[in-house]
Amino acid sequence: MALAGGQRVFYFTDMIDFFEKDLEDIIYESGLEKLREKGLILAGVYNPKKFRQLKIGKYGIPDIVYYQRHEDCHQVTILELKRGKIDLKAYAQAKRYEEGIRKYFKLKNCAFPLYIDIVLIGSSNEERDDWPWVLNSDRSTKVFLYKYGIDGIEFNHVGGYYWHDNEFGDVKKLGNYQDIPF
Image (tube, rainbow, N blue to C red):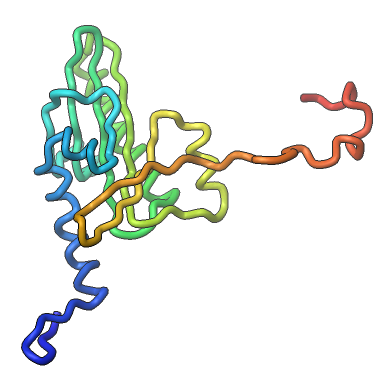
């Protein structure tokens, strides 16, 4: 931030610094209803206990964890926040936290089923390589992109990739369909 002619001027780097330290505050301190209004919908979470920077042994420290004890199960939602792109590295990091939580509940001989959702939040989504396809095969992981503007913060859910047209190309080139193993 700088002063120009007595007025404050914000640079892009000021916004990055803001999100680095404050995105977690915004989410943690907001109520679930306000988050839903802004587009961040956390499935199965209604009246949770929430934890910030929860150390999960050697598995690491997720940004925010919601825990909900339902009548017949335990629901854990892990939020991993990135100021930039959500990618395979962020996904692997969150899966490591998930593994730690699963092992902890197993160690405690938990009598009820454990359901864990992962929510990755960043300003953009990696669209190269195989990352978008991972979202198609892991239904317990959701990705939300945030935008910050004059009306505050908003979140948009993004999904994986799907073929929108003929996903197998020209079937005639494949020969007799009965010879195809799928």
